[in-house]
Every structure is written in structure tokens, then in C-alpha cells.
Image (cartoon, rainbow, N blue to C red; front, top):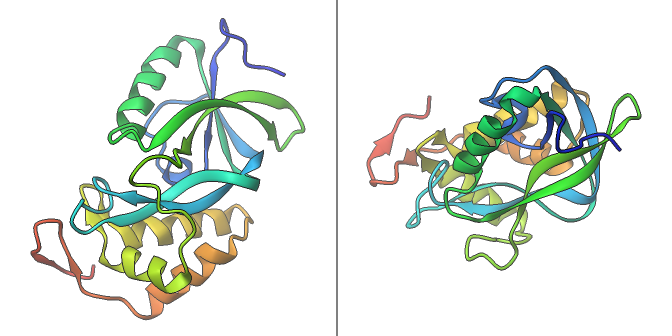
Length: 193
């Protein structure tokens, strides 16, 4: 398996990192991670919600498999990329940093850095029913904008890659057909953009 310490870095993205990585990379390709699944299982208190009105964002939760994107980062940017990812993903420490084996679409296996949901963290929501999920996503608004935009952009990116995620598909469909009025973390009404 590729990915030794003297080499560059591989990063596995399964949510917004797929469509907004925020770091330079030399290669991007589809990749599969076994033993973990993409799940809206993390209450967002910063980027897509607030403690008093949380949003809901993706995490890797145990079981199944996840098709996402692997990014290869040049060795000269490895440390800067890791610092950036820690600042982005660890803002409330709800994710655990892991190096995991992923299989690239070419069949090559590499060790990739990723972030999995910490089931012991107070922001871990677990598996919610569809209506609870829809309510949280509709009402979530944080530093990075509407929670609904995060969900629909992730769904649209997966669809463009040819990846079908039935839960995100259902949720995105509901959000697109029945938009709601959103309130910001400060309680002020926000336009439905």
C-alpha cells in the first residue's frame, strides 16, 4: 500500500472536501473506503449551525463502505495541508483523525488521512429518522451558510460522480421542493437564496 512518511499525502473526502477541498493537490480520483459509511450523524455548531440551533453534517460512521474522493498532495505541502485540515475539521473536536486504507478507482490501495465521527462526542447525533434529519437541515445556518446548501451541493457532487446516496437523494429532493425560511445562529431571518 502506498503512502509512506517520506512521500506525499493522500486525503479521503466524503462530504464538502469533495467539492471544496481548500488545499492544493496533484491528483484527484474516486476512491472507496471499506468499513465506514457516509452519514449525516454530526450536529454542526459552527459551520452549518449553532449550539442553540444545530445543523447536521456528514461524518464517517462505522459499517458499510463509502465512495468518495481521494486527493494526492505533494510532499512539499504535506504538513501545511494537515495543519489546514485540522483547523477546518477539528474546530469542535467531533471528528477523529485517522489514516485509513482506501482503494482508488485504478485499483491501487493507498493510506489516506480522513476524519471519522467520534461516537462519544456530544455532537454525535447517531442515526436519526428522516423527518428529524430534514428539520435539522432546514433550520441549520452557520458560519459557512445554510445547512440545506451543504446537503444539496454534496448530493449534486455525488450524482455528478455517478454515486447514488439514497438518503442524501431523498433529503435533497425534499429541500429543493419545499424550501423553508431559515434563521441564522443569531435568530435573525435569512433569505431563502
